[in-house]
Image 1 (cartoon, one colour):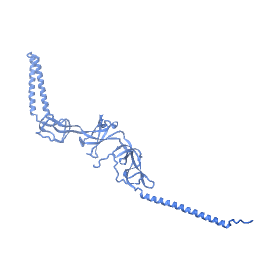
Image 2 (cartoon, one colour; image 1 turned 90 degrees about the vertical axis):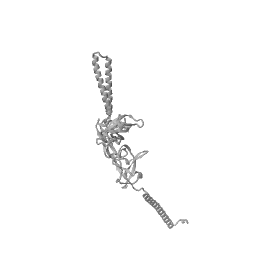
Image 3 (spheres, one colour; image 1 turned 30 degrees about the vertical axis):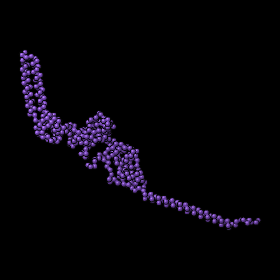
Image 4 (cartoon, helix red, strand yellow; image 1 turned 180 degrees about the horizontal axis):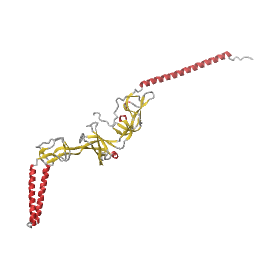
Length: 390
């Protein structure tokens, strides 16, 4: 058999296969090197992006915090009231006259009925005596005419005229005695006198002020509450009053009256309370802060009011949470609030006991901001705060 002239020699076929495998290996290696370069470039890019982001990340913000905790909470209604005396009056004279004696001094405690001022009443007393003499004469005439009537010496009409004249004379004596009594100015009730500039020899007209007289213990407080509070107050409920004049001092009292008429303009109701003032530290005309115990004692979860951020869409708080990397960050959440008491507010939902809430520094943080806690200067969390100027 003849061999075809186109048959490939065996050694050339083997060389071709080796060349093909070599080229295939080169292609595969090239693809692997290219893929490794792409992967390496992406890793390098991600690393550089991470470094840039780390450099541009928000720095830690310093905040102050507080812990949400349960506390015994006495529901209260707060108001501002005006103090007035149980009895208070500007003592004036009813008649005109010249001051003869001033029987008191400024600031004196005086008893009921004590003589304050004596006006000159000499002429009035003389007139009283003259009228008394005329009344005595009328009485003598009346008794004599009674005897004559029994003897039928005069008519009954004469005796009736004498009786009327006697009553008239006695009435004139009583009126003059009342005028004389008005010349002696007496205290209408016991109390403390104010400052006076009255002096003997001074002439007083009717209605001229002599001195103020105030009964200071107890003292009354008038204050107003919204109509919604009517269901929570009643006569006899205890009240606590504080005054800026006496920081740190509280005065105990109770509600004595609730006005049966609500102001149609403000929808507020006027309430009166009586407060113990045995030390006479309170004076009529002062204003005071009142708190009325309304309802039973409750066990409430409380937060500092400074922890609350008020927004049109609701109240929120920032909670401090772990970031999973050994640090701390913040998370904002909604909270439902109840009543307030001093610097504290009652949290009804959105916060649980033991949560750490941000009380200062909210303006420089947002969700996810890393934080550092510094409680060396944190806002007050006092149930009964006092003004800073005190």
